Every structure is written in structure tokens, then in C-alpha cells.
Image (cartoon, rainbow over all chains, first blue to last red):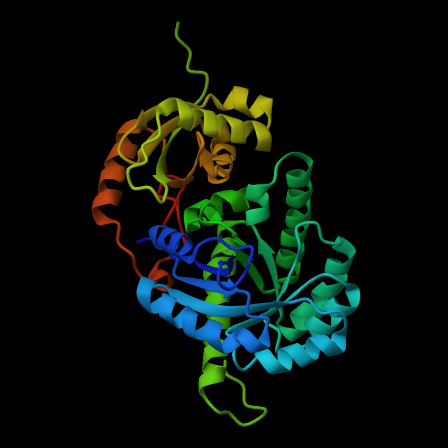
Amino acid sequence: MIMRSYDLRVFMAPFNKRGGSPDEVLKFALKLNIRGIAVTGFEDLERVNGNLSLLKKLEHEFGIELYSRADLSTSSGEELMRAVRKLRHKLDLVCVKLISKQLAYRAIKCQRVDSVVIPPLADLNLVFSLAPLAKENGVAFEINYAPLIRSNGQVRASIIGTYSVITHVVNKRKLPAILSSGAQRWYELRSFSGILAIGEVLGMDRHFIRDATVVCPKKLIERNRSRASEKLFSGVEVT
Amino acid sequence: MPVKLGRSRYIALRVESLDEDFKPPRKEVFNAIRDTILQLHGEACLAFAKVRVLSVSDSTIVIKCSNKYAKNILSAISLVSKIGDRPAVLDPLLISGTIKKLREKLKAYLEVNQIGDEEAVPDNRKDDVDLATN
């Protein structure tokens, strides 16, 4: 039986300017047996409702699970919290880009944030210092493999170095991790077996990749959807 | 007396492209794989891996490489995003120690090719089984 992975970060054209055509991306995702895709680009509060209806339409048309996702990168911690408060109940995933120390600490302490996206050339000292807090609050570290496919030479070497250190930290501390593509074009998507082979370069074993592409994303999506669908009393947690 | 210098691995790949009729020639497939190995693992790996493209059928390609470098070759193959001038992805399907066994598995794989619930699938695997499943 074929393992069907999730891809929790894909750029698509109507939602994000950098992304490729949804037709191409979704057709190719179906070919690769990808179970679900999180489409990034839901940061703009005014366009969220329109984008969500378009996403549902695409989901119905192609028969693949699609999730809404916002990658937040604000200038201050307060602004970030405001954005999280406004978007959380509307979207499936709320993630924060690791761009500054202040923002990273604020995001990782907030349990309403699902993951922190680690850029390919991240400050590793910051990652080390965030690891215990991430473990405490259950915020996942997320890395993308598309920059590896896109780059070559010195840049690719640096990305491999950074990602292998992050893999080591995640393994050592037993942190939740997500491995997504960050694909901007259809040919940057990979099947589970392709991800397994790429992970070999980064020092990831089979269990790590299984957890990061199937188990952890599935848990996150199910938890967020059940939270959104049911009205729970404060203090009651969906496990 | 003939001496066997090392063991080989046979890898089955599938060319994934949006164009259903895209059947890249053997030379272009080899060039794409060779270039990525050179970029990712370097000249020494390319030399010792002894990569050969054995067959290119409809959408399945079989390549042969050294057993020691099979993992390196697989990782390089997964980073291929262009064959010739056209965007395409090489998706590793199966790996085996003999061509006969690979053909048997490939036949079974293409016939069965079931999609199921991964939680029900046990996690223990040997080296000589298909790559897409768990």
C-alpha cells in the first residue's frame, strides 16, 4: 500500500503571488498520492472569506483535501498576537516565520500557533534556544525541502548544513516537526518515497519522515478542525 | 579469473510530469541524474556509483548503480526537477539487488498499486522492498 503524505505548505496562484497554477499543482499532487495540501496565503483578513470559498471549490473539483494556512511575519509581538487572534478561528493552520528573535519567542510561547517555519539559512543559535520552549508549548518546527531542490552549490550546502542540525535538535529533544515542501511550482512537490530519499541527505530516518509528513500534520489538522467545529468550554482540550 | 568487484542495486523510477505523453530519451534521463549527482555528491561519488540507465519504458526507468552508493543516488534522483528542457520529477518506486527480482516486484507493484490507510501498515521494513510504502 502506498503511503500518502501531507504537504502543509504549498504556494498557489490566486492565494499567493509567488505560487503556480492550482490546476497544475493539484493534478500533480494527485499523481503523487498526496493526501492533503495546506495552501498558504490567507494572511489578509479582508480576503479570507473569499479565499476560503475558492479553496472549497477547488477541493470539490479535484477531490484532494485542502487546508487554509497563514504564514505570519509581523513587525512586533503584539501585532502577531492580534493577527493570531483574528485568524485562528477561521483557518486550519496558523504558522509564524522565524524572522526575528522577538517574534520567534512570542510565537513559540503562544499555543495557538501551530508551527514555526524555519528558513533555509536560519540562525541556529536562535533555533537551539527555542527548542525547550517549543517542546513545552507543543509548537512544531517546520522545514521546507523545496529550497533544496531550487538551489545548488554553496547555497544548497548551507541549507543541508542548517537542516541537518535542526534534524539533530528535533531528534534529541523529541520535538514535534513538520516536513513540508514550500513548493511554488508543481515540479517541486515530492511523493513520500521522494521525501524519504531527500531526508537521507539531511540525516532523517524513516520514522522521522513518517512522523513529520504523515503523523504530526494529521494530528494538527484534526485537532484544529475539531476545535473549530465544536464549542468547548475554556480549559477543555481536544486530544 | 573474473573477480566481482562489488554488488549492484537496481532502482525502478517513474517519470512524473504533467504531460502524459512525456517519454524522455535514455540519454536525457542519464544526463539529468548525472548532473544532480555531480552537484549533490560530487565527482568521486559519480565515479564509484557506476550509474547506468538500463531501460526506459512508458514511464518507468530502471537504473543500475553500486550497492554502496545506492542511497546517495536515490537522494540525487529525488532532487531532479528537469529532464532535458522540460520540468519533470523522478519518483523512486522500488529498489532491489537483482534485475529479475526488481522486474517481479515492479510487475506486482504496478498491478496492485493500492492506496490504503498507512496507520494500519507495520513499520518494520527490509532494504529490498518498495520505497513508496511503509
